[in-house]
Image (tube, rainbow, N blue to C red; front, side, top):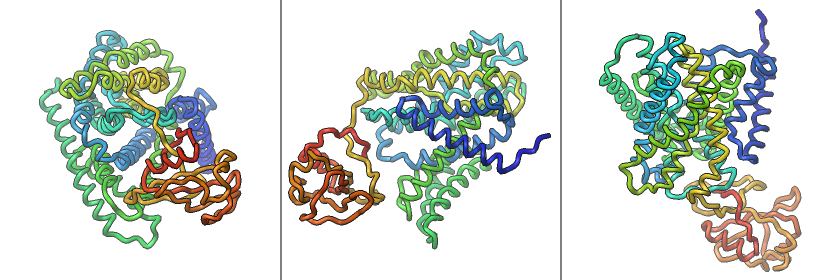
Length: 505
């Protein structure tokens, strides 16, 4: 048995992360889902690629569980309650009923169309439903990575609706997967009332634990004064992980609990909030990369060929039939959601890392047909990302549910930020020949009222200007004003017509 040194693992791990970051940056510019690129990097370095043999399903499951916990916690922290408040009801319905309907339609299709594949390995109808359950949840990371890279702004509260659905549907898909695995392993004819009762109980306990621990966590964050401010992000992470584990041992859904805990904390005030949120955002990205790389390493591309045709058919059935049906049926009671909005929501049914992670569960439990499920889910995910992920911005424009936002330049040269409680807005302005036509001294530039230049960068030198400061071409000004409208007026008066920048808030 070959012993791999710790130093070699660190070398390979750092190389994988570096390649993923570089490839991900290029993917943003090309409009390719970053998730897909991370998976491809993992596959390239795997046993059928450069030969890094990683086939430990249990370790992959553990890594995936921890990473998903952190991703959901960070997603809750970033979700603003005021944004999701108008669409809580449809979001919850889509995250629960929508997932069940997607699994039902897909499971029946798989059984009637490809039931013989599972019968050949001793599996039956519930195995088909198990495959459907693993792919019944959606992935939001790739969706908004593409939309943001293309500078699209969704109308009619579509973005918070999709964020709430994607944050809330993973627990339901997980529950369906676990319940179906238990049914298959027990071999008994299930009582559907008891199954429904178990699902409701776990979701209820998870929601209660998440909310209560979220409130307790806010008190802890505000009650404990750390001597070292850098420990606040660590404390925040610990509280999130504790929420997940507590719900699990209380027989609740840990994924739902950690998301709700993050939601409560993210909408509360506590010390070092901004730095803690940035830490969690970076940690969540690292978790996503680790999760995607692990799943990519686990798959053997040559095995995918055996399920390629059935998986392609299932993928397009989900995209064109199962997802639209589940969306329109789930949103039927909500007449304020327009037809075009429903069509776009139907198209944003991206499958991502979570379905692949859930497909590992039956593989780790030794369920008959688990390898077929895992390989099929992997193909379905890749098809979804390629077919839907690369066309999201195009579909949004065709349906008229997006608009190009007018954002001002992101702060890059000045490492300064305001608390979210301070409603001022900032931007950077480059001094060009056109700008200097208004005058060379700062006081001569036509800045509107309530707008102030607080700092100038000239080369590597920073200084606070006065009205008599002479400006040079290439100078960068840090401008602050009361609100966004005043900054846009600044652009207009200076003759800067291109507002297509990323907003800095």
